[in-house]
Image (cartoon, rainbow, N blue to C red; front, side, top):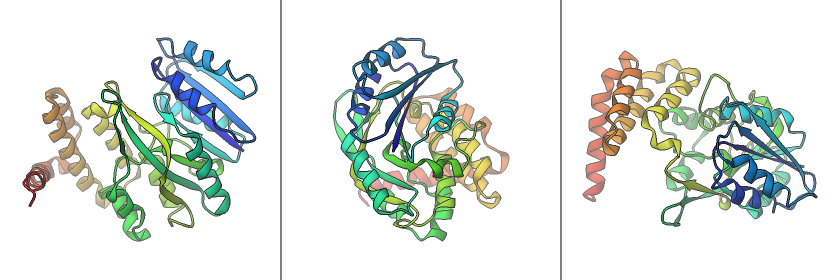
Length: 303
């Protein structure tokens, strides 16, 4: 019934907790696939130690040379033979009950192809929790299809997490899985899914009150690398966005990451973003940055 795919890379401190939660999912026909992307630490040993505690489960541990997350996801999708698929990063903590509740929701709505459940931010240093999804997500998911088709590029409420989502395996295959030319795993996937399955409550479900995962924030998260984040976004927009929106959305996101880089003191990252921006988008960046800074000022002043 369900395949749980766990791509891993250098998460020796986290994968044990992740897999211990995965192995608590009680559902008939469970298959667990761990795909390690050439870890140089003890991730594989830690994974094997946990999986050996559950000899009754159908598990597969695949080790491959380092070729990226997208490669791992496509390998896992290719090996999945169940109706449903769930994937979770090896540093996150899945919630078994939330996974089962989303599957029940998909069973009750046979036309729905995926279910976006809720998620909690887990801040490693403090141990505090907060909801990933907020009012901006509720607004986005409840937009008319025509409006969401535009706002998925111009006003996407990042993040929307693959690891808070249960999929029908056939739905992921229908969009071709993950594009090996793109680094980013989640945003392009949702762009393609919303295009093919556009109607909330019919083609897909949004159930933020069902917590599916704790999404860990720690010092090694990619999202703190502003140049890499913008490059992944640039790739996705150039591949997927309509031509008439491309310059605007790249300027907007470029301006955002430039301001973020300034905040982090990442001058090298800021300069890299400037070098990546197409000329027409680059011309729009000063106006975008001024607008973003002004809105931030108004918000801080409570206006």
